[in-house]
Image (cartoon, rainbow, N blue to C red):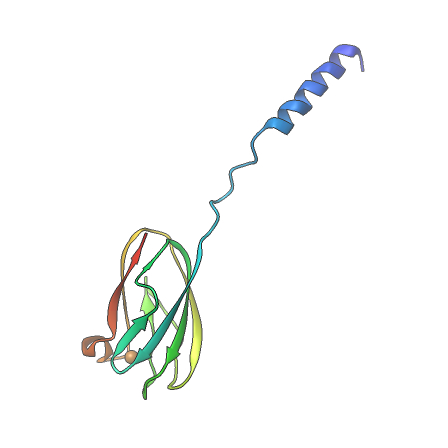
Length: 117
Ligand SMILES: [Cu+2]
């Protein structure tokens, strides 16, 4: 290597070092919402969440089994006295309607709206 090649290599190394870190996906927000399920309503600890990954901690305090459905996804059935975790990625801001898809439950009141900001 001659002097010019060395100088070029050094300059290149400096450039690489100065280059900004490749922009990765923005840090995902992880939010947890506790959802109490009973006849016939849902009680959520949060009515607004930031967009991103949302973990719903489902607790069935009723006498019937219930499901939690949001953004086209449905949790596994939660039996009376049981609990479960249900994780969904809510990418877009807006209002998401959630409900219990068990026949009759939505109409009886198991529904609501979660605002995603
Ligand atoms: Cu239900």
